[in-house]
Image 1 (spheres, helix red, strand yellow):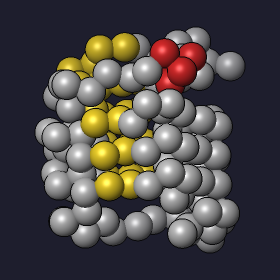
Image 2 (cartoon, one colour):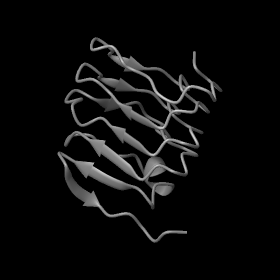
Image 3 (tube, one colour):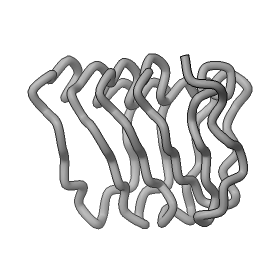
Image 4 (cartoon, one colour):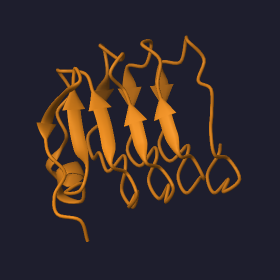
Length: 117
């Protein structure tokens, strides 16, 4: 839907949003996303290639489940902070390329950012 929309720098998500589909924001110009509590499904590659994305807050999404395959933030090289609900665990595929991201769970840091490159 917003694939490749480089001019899209922000988005207000409706309070009833329950799913972010595969590749829906891939390669868009988003800089920060905060998803509503209603979100329960995050599909693979949803935000992949968002080169300007610096932060994502899913902390309110208590029912969130990431679909198998992950790579939700593949190619988001400026991503530096990710807030997740306690029950969400990143897949091995997601962790591989997120060495510079501070992942927070319930606002407590669980993984510190790696060395800056």
